[in-house]
Length: 234
Ligand SMILES: [Zn+2]
Image 1 (cartoon, rainbow, N blue to C red):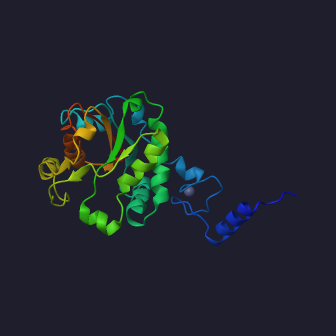
Image 2: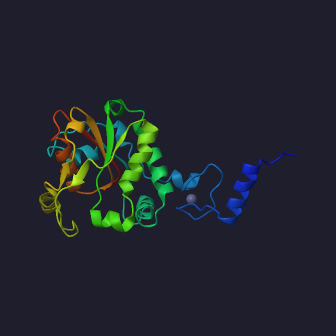
Image 3: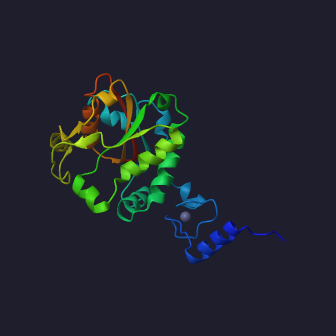
């Protein structure tokens, strides 16, 4: 008969008191499973874009600003599994979801050639009102996990909103781009000179916000940008 260590005993009791449930199917998670059970994890609609030059994410930014590479981890559909996870990440403070998605995405990026040239990771800033209400920026949480897996520093507080913007809801791409133009700036341009910056956001729709962030980063002399989003709308 095996002897339980005190830690194993504690863990067992915690699992009994607070069973961890799969975000996809609500079944109890097994040891070693995080956020999703193995079955639901295989259902995640991964794009595989990290290994494909000219992928849909890159096409969406083509001609708008110069970038090294752009990729998205999963397809985002209304009421899909990714939408559910990202909703949980935004509204229920489930930081384990940021860890789960950030880790899986970063593990894919880690095997690409281009990621080795990235110097720093940076999150698209939230609207200050939203961040105040939520208490955190979900894209920054993703950056922290991705930075840990990829061994890259995460920049915080350099890319900031310099102008208030209207809600993007009910605006088309041209209107969104106009609304976001000049909305961001760098506090410390020198600090980003000559660097390759990976800009991270949760979902890519028209890309107007990311475009405005990229243009702000590119104001630093010799800076280059790449883009990584967890979801891409299809
Ligand atoms: Zn499940």
